Image (cartoon, rainbow, N blue to C red; front, side, top):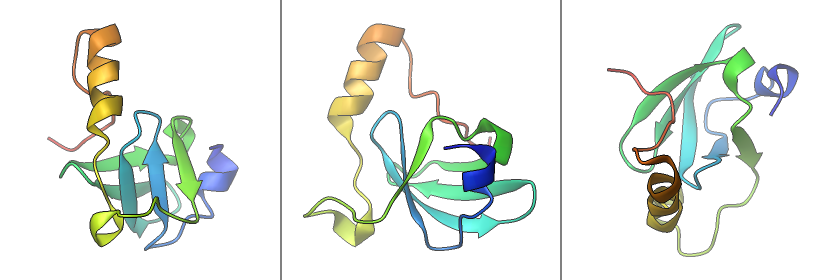
Length: 91
């Protein structure tokens, strides 16, 4: 999504990263959003760095608590990148 679209996100909005993992917006302000991902990572992402994130209005059926890790997407990413997911996360 673009920076302009990202600035419209609200707490509780569901998003998905390009690696297929769903997340929920838990904080949002003028500069960034905080996302709790289904694989227990937490990321604070600047609005200008949201190119790999999309808002989803409806989550896939069978998604536990609105979030479900996509292990296939993660394993495919690792296969081609040789590393773990590149989602921003807090250390």
